[in-house]
Amino acid sequence: MMTMTREAAETVALQALGWLAGNDALLPVFLGATGASAEDLRARAAEAAFLGAVLDFVMMDDQWIMAFCDAQGIGYDQPMRARAALPGGQERHWT
Image 1: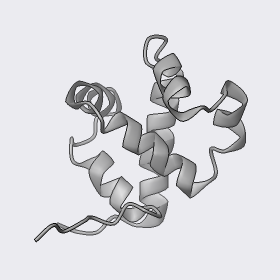
Image 2 (image 1 turned 120 degrees about the vertical axis):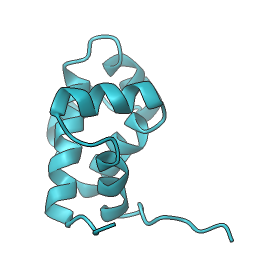
Image 3 (image 1 turned 180 degrees about the vertical axis):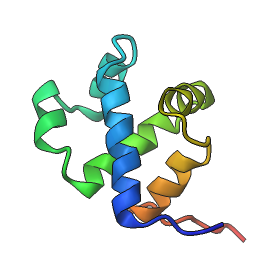
């Protein structure tokens, strides 16, 4: 599997943020889970750590991953690959 560039990862994460912002059912769940406000979404959209948190949230549920990826026309592995390319997202090996 090829490693995703940080720029490409940030693009996927920004797409996820836009998808979340447009999801009236899921956005309040994200805001509640992260403690972020609607203003934070705009103010922190350029922060790699915040974008990682967005991807962490979307990846909590397979249905959310599929809905996001289907809406963007990207592969289901893209959020995971993007998260791995952002700070704090390196894959953990438990062996």
